[in-house]
Length: 375
Ligand SMILES: Cc1ncc(COP(=O)(O)O)c(C=O)c1O
Image 1 (tube, rainbow, N blue to C red):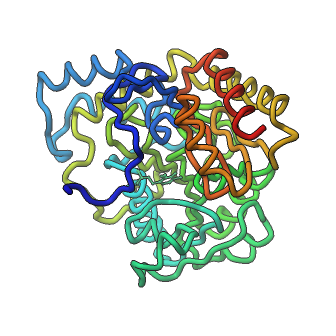
Image 2: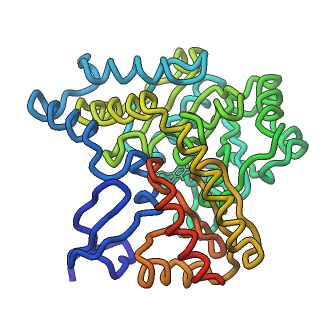
């Protein structure tokens, strides 16, 4: 048999339209995982399709050392929409690369090597990002990874204060942990992280690969939390399905980034896709809609299954339902009996990361299905 890495699921997806995907036999599924948060605007959004098609007709690829209008427009758009004073962008192709760059930039800009990361955190699978990822199951077969990484409990400002010092290059943290089980930081934690890192000259990196692009109710979760880090990393939803990642930086980082580079950094097609995605999200007030729909979905889930499950938590349309050890069984039933594709977060949490464009009808379908599955 051909192929390699993935444990593939028994559903072959061939087509997508908005919040729905379709199997090779035409079966319809409501995509409540948005293909791992990669299509915030839903499948096949015309603004993104048109921008990409138009760019294809001009030129498919031009290397980043030559200016290109689509890339420049994306740099400007990200500078305009990122929290001030973050206004420099390095482009790549994935979340792990965006974090890899952030770790390298932090080491280069501070002259230090130590990285502090959080327990249960997830930052990607290349050697540097993997070293800052918590779970052994992702790391063990590939060790030794890069050294000088210390893990602290998530959401614990005291532990962070003890771990970060003048020799620390970076503290990397998800403002809402995704893979770790949908764990939002409590009020005050990110502010404390900002204070601690500022005092020690440490780069504060918010990994917004999952939280960004409006998912938690603001374009960037750092804007919702009102804390501006030194770097924000992005990928997943940034190109509405096209592979693009970004490391957004303050000047002191960008001016001392070292010599990092990548051949495929910011090609015109992915720049067109990302530009169309970000401008549509902003122009159509998608984050505000995600905040409203997230509140509706969480409230309805709480009313329907609050007594049956251990916890329902999240921000905006990044929601975790802690069902206990049966999460995988629940996901299978949702897919095969109810035509709903959701995601796991660890072994105990059913994770909902739908397209941010869903309406109450979609939310009600999920609530009804969850009530049958866990009830
Ligand atoms: C918070 C976070 N960071 C980084 C990554 C890695 O992104 P990618 O799979 O695009 O390398 C992920 C992927 O799930 C993620 O959730």
